[in-house]
Image 1: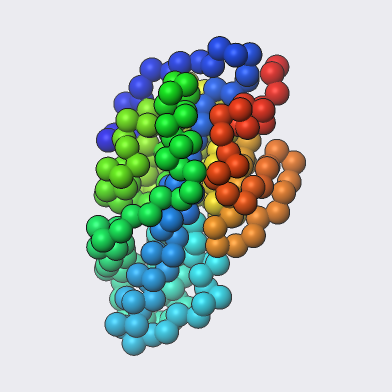
Image 2: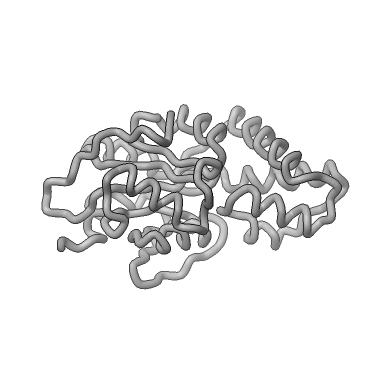
Amino acid sequence: MTSTVPAPVTRTADGSALQAVLLDMDGTLVDTEGFWWDVEVEIFAGLGHTLDDSWRHVVVGGPMTRSAGFLIEATGADITLAELTVLLNQGFENRINRALPLMPGATRLLAELSAHRIPTALVSASHRRIIDRVLASLGPQHFALTVAGDEVPRTKPHPDPYLFAAAGLGADPARCAVVEDTATGVAAAEAAGCHVVAVPSVAPIAPAPGRTVVTSLEEVDLPFLRGLIAVR
């Protein structure tokens, strides 16, 4: 799956202003946010360090370089950022090879978007090697475009990944619905000018103008997403 060759965009024909749906991956479609933390705990234990559970909220949802850099600085561990990045990706891949649970409602939502030919992109801070592995379970046919964290100059919380995805789908960011699970991802989508549906996974996310908070992906379907964006 490539992030540079999007499929043709089919506009909605029901009067909705919704042009595209942009979906986060970890914690939104697949129940893997806990996997990352478990791998981080395991690696640092091997280096002789115990991670403070309060750090989990600091590292969740952001780019690996930020999370890894924070943990190296916080613990003083004798490991480079490049070395830790390799270990994190390897550890995560090992875990999803054993099990890759999807979030409740993910399969149904993806099938619904595909059935109605809604332009859909997967936008993640995870690296391409991880995204391609997860896509095998999610179904690559559900996405016209995928964007990995190691393929953009600045990843979440910067708006670049969502701006790239919207442009690739030929959509106005203001007419894109984004589904995210972390404050970092929400910040990226809102900075891009998208309407955000937050489904918090690890830490609470408060409602705000242009942002809708739900408790589960089970609450999100196509009529719901279409209703978020007023016809102009």
